[in-house]
Image (cartoon, rainbow, N blue to C red; front, side, top):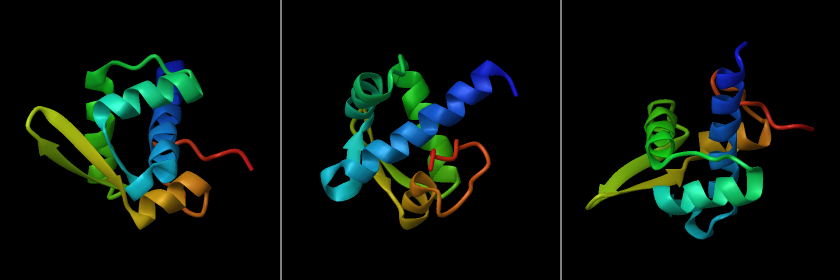
Length: 97
């Protein structure tokens, strides 16, 4: 597995974990980018975060919608299970026990 793949999988897990701690389990891409940078050390671009949200939505781990130019993500039950390790989703890093 490449370093880039490892970083992508970890960034996706970080997004799910942040959404799990967010009131309403929902946040916009800009807030998520800042949170994963501050909490998990990911220096992600907004394009990477929006791309990850789209990928997570395809996997049914989040729902995604646009509000003007802003992308909003909301955690699903399946996404919460992946974030806590109750479900394994290829492409998302498994959390440490």
